[in-house]
Image (tube, rainbow, N blue to C red; front, side, top):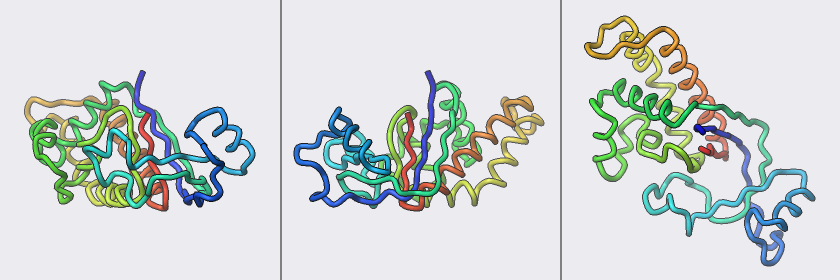
Length: 196
């Protein structure tokens, strides 16, 4: 068990009149319909999704409906076990100045001025992020990279009291950081990042 991430770009809404009557997402009929097209099809539910209660902008600008994957880029990667990802997020929170990741979760509604907030205060095992959030997160990953890497390197050299990482842990952190950055770069072009 662990966190896998899949990314696509170029999602375009399928007009309602082109969707077969009575189509249920991810049913046997759905997969038959998808098989008869040249593209993968995704269903985005903005009305009944669990995440809509808490993260209201995570799929913007998408609306509920079926989408054709017409993109030219995709990416997938394995973050690692859920406990590894939890630790990775804790390190990222430390790197941007939070003493504990729980401090972020206590802030309430998103403060979009906080780098990485849409990833740090999001499900660690499931969910989707659309192009608007992906663009913001890509800019965070790009703009904060030097600061975050310097912090992580300092953890290896013992500059930060009480926290020490070995070379492998630093390397692994940076690999995952680069994967996230690439994911959000791709998804900001009408795409989606899916945590599974």
